[in-house]
Picture 1 (cartoon, one colour):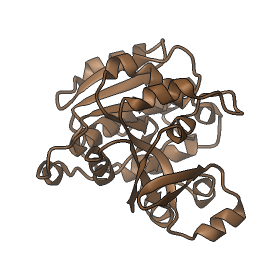
Picture 2 (cartoon, rainbow, N blue to C red):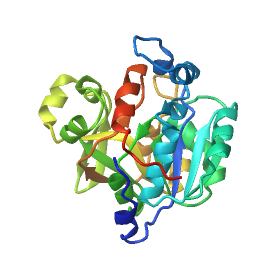
Picture 3 (cartoon, rainbow, N blue to C red):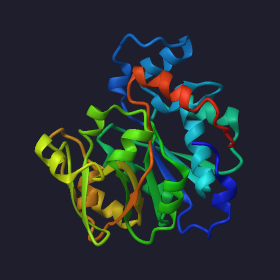
Length: 277
């Protein structure tokens, strides 16, 4: 997860330079108290549910994410936040990013990931963009590849590599959505696959980690879908509503900060990573 800005800069200019980072999440799993040993600052962040603002070493998780996005070629990041976003505003004023512009988009109610993306429409404008989760840290090489995509696309993480290079336990990865594709085009997304499905697809099956490239077409797709069985507007349903989505297979890991017990391992893995905002 070390900085690769020099190697990325040597590549062709990316087609996409804007990222939408979903940072509003309720953090219900993070709020749940457990046995993990946290600093006072980490405990406060966990209690607030602001996973992207979790202190990790001398920085916050969002700092690592923004630094990696800048390394990949992003020049503008739009953070989707709640109406009460004083902590985000205060932190951004403190770190004063210069490698990329950072803007905030407000999601008024926590109505799901598709609603979060739709909330960024006015700030994003008519430019293509990538979408990532605020509580995940994605590999620079994977994001850089996605930035060169034309049209709507998604990274498909090889399940075996994800298990080997991430901090995510096997049982959690087994519950992630599987990607079925043909000729590099998305055919279907299988959410919460059962044991038989997992066994049939093998260890190199592609998994979705909510790392997408979108054209403005996604905003119309978000407006067309209905709430899921959970009562939320899900980005995966909006993706299904798109006419065509390219699948980019990728062998790499993702750091996940969903629960309090993830914090120590994420901090250990990021201990040698340089943050440059």
